[in-house]
Each structure stands twice: as C-alpha cells, then as structure tokens.
Amino acid sequence: MSDRQLNRRAFIKGAAVLGTGVWLGIERGFASSRSANDRLNIGIIGVGNRAEANISGVNSQNIVALCDIDEEFLRSAAEDFPKAKTYTDFRKLVEQPGIDAVVISTADHTHAVATLMALEAGKHVYCEKPLTHTVQEARAVANAAAKTKLATQMGTQIHASSNYRRVVELIQAGAIGTVSEAHAFSHKSWGGAGRSTDAQAVPKHIHFDLWLGPAPARPYDSEYLPVNWRKWWDFGGGTLGDMGCHYLDLVHWALGLRHPKTIHAEGPPPNPDTTPPWLIVNYEYESAKVSWYDGGKKPRLMAEGAVPDWKAGVLFVGSKGMLMADYTKHRLLPESRFAGFKAPARSISDSIGHYDEWIEACKHGAPTTCNFNYAGALTEAVLLGNVAYRAGRKIEWDAATLKVTNDPTAMNFVTREYRNGWTV
Image 1 (cartoon, one colour):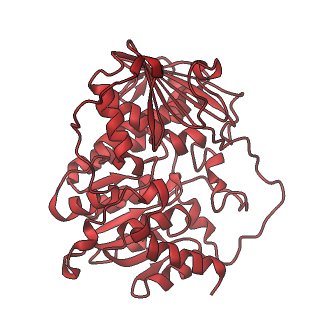
Image 2 (image 1 turned 30 degrees about the horizontal axis):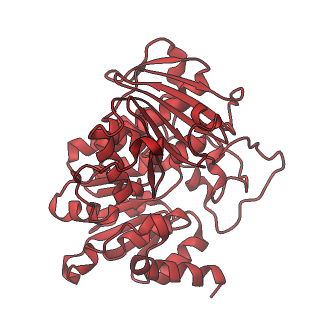
C-alpha cells in the first residue's frame, strides 16, 4: 500500500474520533451513537482531497457507493469501503437504488448538476461550498430544495463552531452598537494562471471528459487537476469562490443579510479565462456595506494599523466599537474600551456538529443551519462579486427577478452555457 493510501486510511478512520483541527474538531459524534440498523445509505460523489474530510464526517453511516473520475482516488477509497459500489460517472451513482443521501465534493462546475439530479431523485444532499458555480444555479438549487423538502447542507463547516455563534450573539446583542460596515478578508490567492500551450495526453486513470461535465470542451491540462481548477472560470471562482462562503457566512448570519443591492469590484484587468490574483469587492445591502479582500489586499483600518494584522477573518465596524473574528477566536476593539466587558447570555445553542445536523435532518427532518435556502442566498451574494468584476463596472442587482438591471451584458456571467447531456 502506498504512503498516500496509508495516510488516507488513517485519516478516514481516525479523524472522527480525534478531530482534525478546526474542520472536524467541532463535531460531537452524535450520529455515531446510533444503532447500526438506523443508518443512512450514503453515496459519495468525489472521494479525494477535500472529500476525505467530508467522508470522515459521515462515515458513521453506511457508505454504499463511491464515485470519482480519478480511478486511483477511487481505488484508494474503495479499500476503506469494500462493500460500496464504485462509479466514474456520478449520474450512474444517483440512479443506484437504495441510496438515501449523497455527499458532493466535486469541483464547483459540477455542483449544481449533481445536486439537482440527486434532489430530483429524492435523495438528501450535502454539497461543498460554494453551493454552485453560477448565481442562476444557486437560485435553481435553492428552489429545488424548497420544492422537494429534502435535507440539505452546504459545506461551511465553521458555521457549527462555538466561536461563530458567540460572535453572532455579540453583534446581535449590540455589543459594538449599530454595525454599518463589515470587511471579510483572506490571504489566499487562486488566480493568475494560464493554459498550457503544449498538447498533453490524458492519464489512463483520469476520465477527463466526465470531469469536464457541463464545462466547455477543453484539451486536458495537468494544471487543472486535482486542485488548481479554481484558477479558471470554466471550473471555479478564484479565491472569492473558494473562501467567500466561509467568511461572508459570518457577516450574513450576524447581520441577517441575504441579497445585495449593488456590487462593485476592483482587481487586475479581467482575463476571459482565468481568475484574478487579487480582488476587492464592495457590496451594498439595505442595512450595511460589506467588503471582500483577497490575494493580500486588506481593509483600510488594518493597513493603517488601527486593528490587528490577521491573515484572514472578518472585521465588523459598529457605532460603539469593532469586532474582529476568524475561525477560532474573536476580539472586541479597541480593547481599552471593552475592559471588563461581560458577554451577553448565550442565545444560540451549540451545534450537534455540522455533519450530524445534516444526518439528523435526513433521518428526522430536524433543521440544518446551512440548508440550501440560507446557503443559496449566501452563494448568490458571493458569486455576484465575480459577476461585477468580470462585467467591469458597478452592477445593480434585482434579486427578485435574478437580473442585473443596469448592464444586460453582465447577465452573461450570471448563468452559463452547458454541454449537451449536462444541463440543469
């Protein structure tokens, strides 16, 4: 067995018990205490890389099907779940009788197709963030989830953490007064790539046409797989698409936001193929202004030294002070103003665990906190930042009609064309 297989097996079997830092340390093992005959039959769509943590989050249930376009990843996962049927085409997995629910951890461009197919087949869905590749897909997925009333959860795992809950309580209790602006930032940079000009043979273990799925037909490029696909518009949404749902989640939750009215983005001149190495997006909501920064760009207050220089997080600016938070900690600022501050009584219950919320919802209909109604609106807002950037101007958004009202050409980035056989 290879070192990778050994490491993967140790991760899958041990992570649920030991935790894996911030991602799985928030889990409390509720579902794992259930009897063996009360387990869900789960199909896994995408088994490598990020999927490994998602598999660990649900492996208290029956993993009955596995799918990946990479046969090496698939073979390794099958060693952990030898009774599971294996597929390279998720459309075939969705057709397998007896599957109650699916976990989708593919590249962004196949999220919506797989999710909608599963919902239409009557299966509960857990899908990684961002929920979809386009704004229009996010609305379609949210509508389908509402219609089917199936259990859904988007992979914003930090939403279940105690830290995020305490931040929301502080903001909503008025600890820093009325919040007029919020700034979310990430040091990551998924952008600035170019396509290879040399012809490359597709490796024998890769089903590249299935990986492309609904995306335009492209020659194989080793840069795409397994993780750099985020750098191309055909497949991902850059750093905003990767990290926006995690940090803007806290902003949406704390301030009760859903749809921005206007969006303006700054960055390098847009490239029709690849995502930018840095981006600043300014959203205007009915009640607050929200800004996003990535690729090393930072809020003005941070650049000026008025607040701590963190790599990633959220800064809330209120009439009585400020609050900074990341995944694991938060600080009220300036600290001298909040000396002796007593936190409000807890008003948000602790989560039973991000994955366990979904498992319980699948079994008994209990609510999830990142269901596709909430996650759909969050994903729409995140992706509208990319729409504004690619449009090259400030856009005005009508969420009710799903239209950019001041620039019809920007609608080219709200939706996309699909290859035959992969439409949503």
